[in-house]
Length: 421
Ligand SMILES: *Cc1c(COP(=O)(O)O)cnc(C)c1O
Image 1 (cartoon, rainbow, N blue to C red):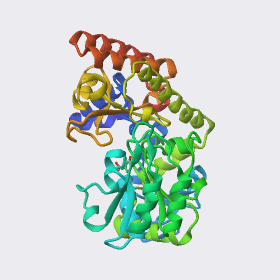
Image 2 (cartoon, helix red, strand yellow):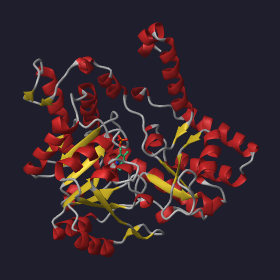
Image 3 (cartoon, protein in one colour):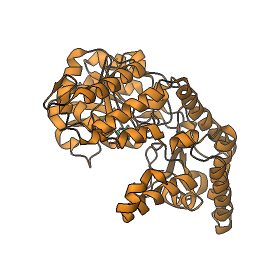
Image 4 (tube, rainbow, N blue to C red):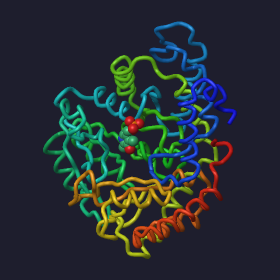
């Protein structure tokens, strides 16, 4: 492989680990819904000499000299992000999704202030106030939940009552394990009623929004969106904060990201973000985003047919949560291991109000973004779902072996496209 010719010569150990990982990604099927394959162009930007440069500050306002080209890079990333998400302001410097959320909280809140966010076992993210994060030592997180886990409907009446009572400074929407679209209008109306800022963490569905396959929270009046750039959006590992229209908020966000929290921006990653945003502005990205959802629906249909229990009854986006404990009598951990042996990579996941322990919960979570990048269409996606059911039902070595052979065939028939290698 020409791409690594220097590493191959100069650092055999790392060369072996990198190429081993590439082989793993090529031969198995990746169903972790937060993972994807980035394009070769994105990788080239990440491997560029921009990594050598310190660019503390923002375009036109840097602490060091020599910023002619880094300013061009960051400005392009910002302009493309704004267009993609209909934002007036964008900060492309956060190093990851967690960093973006942390900077957003500190930009808008004082210690002790309250955030009203989605219950974690109902789909919220660690950075939305999980007790293991230090954020909970500083801010006060309160919760809203689903009213009905069979349909996924959020209890908006309860949310409004809670908001009136606790007067949060931020109402936070967004999730890493919730398969439905939210009623953005209701979020915004509740936030406005109690004088809170509305924030949507679109980390998981940014690609669906950019590809116009999911609603854009800004169209419903959300103030801020935070995101990762490496999930459905198919860019480099990183984060971003978007502001719909308030200059005052945008200024606070910029100050919180730098110098509040971070040092020099990773300009090679920002260049890669710009490349990925450029790709997402093309018509082909719309097709990809739409196909992600079509493929999820194809899998959903199979699980419905076999009467397997999906949380919220199915999915509107790129991911499905399956209650394997109720459907197959095995834990999420066991299901993850069985499917891993068959060449299907996904993760165990707690389900709403799980009766089992977090380390071995009742569910598994999986999705279609990486398969879609590989060129999977409904027929192949449905077949993957059938294979999953066969393995989870039979649980025999013979069934795993049969599944593994078929998965490998499917993977070989749909190699990672040349432009994504
Ligand atoms: C993945 C995710 C994050 C964190 O992103 P990292 O880049 O891993 O820090 C934040 N919020 C949500 C909703 C996520 O799904």
